[in-house]
Structure formats: structure tokens, C-alpha cells
Image (cartoon, rainbow, N blue to C red; front, side):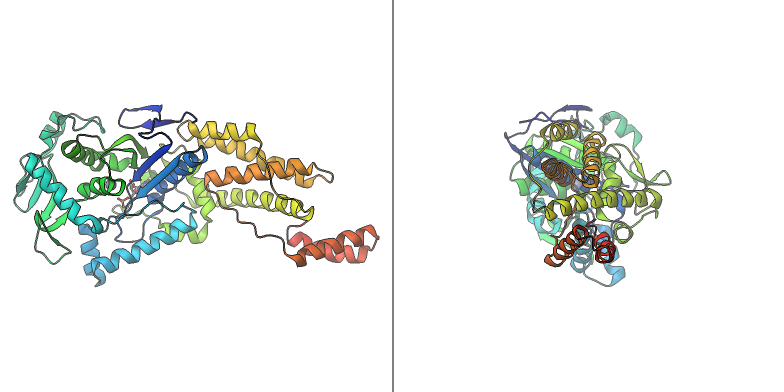
Length: 447
Ligand code: AMP
Ligand code: ZN
């Protein structure tokens, strides 16, 4: 198998990817809290891990990629009340809206898309285990994780327990032993969604939801890759690791990958800051391919600034790619040929770029080269059709790995007939007919 290098935030360096099981990769990245329409930034991790999945599949791995829906959360309870809906009605509505965007962005179907609400009993018994081991305790109306019981706490976010302890202040109303401790379960009988479980009536905390979903969906305590946006590194992922270390003695994932922020005017796009641009709205103004290219054109760990102009420029690029691929397809169809074969050297350069911690910029250079070559092969009268066929096939393969969708409907029989009429009119010097047919064929992209 090809060598792949990924930047692992836990180790703080790029390192060779070695799967737990040869030939197989398990990936989990944190999904949205579904209490309203998600903003464009929420799709940056989605697109990044979709690219990683597509690339790993292309080089022969069997990939199980999973992302969750956080459908139990205080924000959901609040919003459901406001909209006069049950929490389930509210979250299902926004999950559907999210999935419409996934389809427009051409995201591969996930191995599984777990919802926190479906794993409540497992979460409760996980917390009970922690209590029995002495890693969790009840303080007032919450069950907390005892951070001091994990000596490696802070390893992911490179912080020392002593510094965190000194830096944090304890809320006077809190029943925590230490300010760093975090809630695993809220014991409550309020009018929000709640469950009767082995740890009592109430609902789980976000950090427990993810670690239990990872364990349950994959059926094991350690997976290959865990990811999300940079904002999740601390405290969310740190707290997932702490629970996993305490419960299972593992750091939950061998590689931790974090994706840079989407910014608006230099500030992180965020629901709470009120500077969100909704993904669903962006996808009515721009193609899914343009949005994907917009994100892929910046290294995934670096921040990227949202502007309408930038997205519009990627619409143009998307259109340029589509036109070249369509024209090349038509030229082959009219010669009764199909795209076949692979330009191995180019594909090798493309995959080698992605194997270097998803260096999309270098991969795109190879793809752009194919587009340029297609354009010149299409223009030439007596072009090498077998080279055209190979170049087109290679370009379509690379587009697919990048997740760019170019569905090209086959040429209709009627269009083929018009083209043949045009050719014979020209051969017979019947310019009146050929002049009449030319604009029709040009409009259809056949000339
Ligand atoms: P949330 O619903 O806020 O928990 O976010 C869902 C996912 O989107 C997480 O992986 C976040 O890290 C990610 N995310 C949120 N805001 C941004 C942003 N501005 N840029 C990139 N990723 C983000
Ligand atoms: Zn999570």
C-alpha cells in the first residue's frame, strides 16, 4: 500500500499513517448540533474528511467513515420550545436540511450517521462504569468527570493540568471538585427531553455522547482517525480522550486531525457570533463543486476567508472544467468512442500529492493539466482520439477523487442525427444547411 502522511495534532507533527488493521481505516468526525440551519463553516470538516475517504479508497483502503448528529443538547431544548416543537421534530427537520446540503456537495454516503439520542443507555452505563472506577462523581445535579484522575489530561491541546487548574475559576454555584471537571450527565426532571437510566433521570453531556458513539458504532475502544474543526480540540476532544483513557485505557484514536476555520471578515464563522452564512443559501447561489473547490483550494489546516467573490470565481472554474469535460465527451461520442485508460504518471503524481497530508494544491495542478490538454485535443481537427479518450478518463477519475461531480448525460440520438446532417451538408458544400445547423450544434456544445 502507498505511504500516506497525515498531520496528527496529538503528536503535533506530520507522521506516516499506519492503520490498526492492514488495508482498513476507521474515521469519525464530529458532526453538527442540529438546532438550526448549519453555516458554511460546518461543511469544511465534512468536505475534508470526504476527500480523505475518497483518497484512501482510491489507493485501496476499505474505509468506514462516520459522523454523528448531536440531537440531545440544551440548545435543541431551547429552540424546540421557541418553535413549539418536540426536540425530535426539531432535530429531524434540521437533519433533513443538512442532508440536502450533503447531497448538493456530493458527499459520499457515510458508513453510519449515528444520532446521540439512539445511544442513551450505552452512555448511561459508560458513566456508571466511570463512577464505579472512581473517575466520575455526583456533585449537585450533575455527574462530573474527575479530570485529576487522568494524568495525561491536556496531551492533545498541549496544556498542563496545573496551568489549567490555576487558570480556571470555579463558579460559586458549582458543585465541582475542581474547575476543570466537566459534566457527563445532567440529573434533571425539567421539561426538556430526558431519559430514565442506570445513572438516574436526565440527559448526557456532549463529550460523553461522542466517545460512546465512537465505541458503539465501531465496536472497539480505539479507531484510526478522529477529527473535527480546530475549535473541538479543547475541550471537546480532550474530554473525549480523558473519558476513553479512564474507561478503556486508550486515547480513542491513533490520529487526531483538525480542520482550520472558515472566517467572515477575519473572524471565525459561528452561530453564536451571529456572522453565519447559511450553507443552504450559499448552495442556491453557487454549485456544490464551487463550494468544494473553494475549501479544497486552501490547505485544510489553514484558515480561509469567506467572500461571495471568491465563491463566484470558483463557479467560473467549475464551469471551465465542466465545459472541457463535456466537449471531450461529445467529441468521443461522435466518433463512437468512450473514455478509457489512465495516464499512469499523472495519476501517480496526483495521488502522491494527496498522500502528503492532502496536498490538494499540487493535486489540482495535475487535474488542471488534464483539463488544458483536453481543451487542446478538442480544438484540434485531427487530434489523437485514443489520447483524448485516455486523458478524459484520467480527468474523470481525478475529479471523482476530489469529489467533483460532473454527470454528463449521453448524447441523444436526435443530436447525433443533427451532427451527421451537418457533416454531410458540409461535405456536399450545402452551406445553407450547414449554416443553419451550426448554431444549434454550438448551443449544445457539439462544435
Ligand atoms: P458544531 O455544530 O458547532 O458543533 O460544529 C460542527 C462541526 O463544524 C465541528 O466539527 C466544528 O469544529 C465545525 N465548525 C464549526 N464552525 C466552523 C468554522 N467556522 N470553520 C470550520 N469548521 C467549523
Ligand atoms: Zn464530538
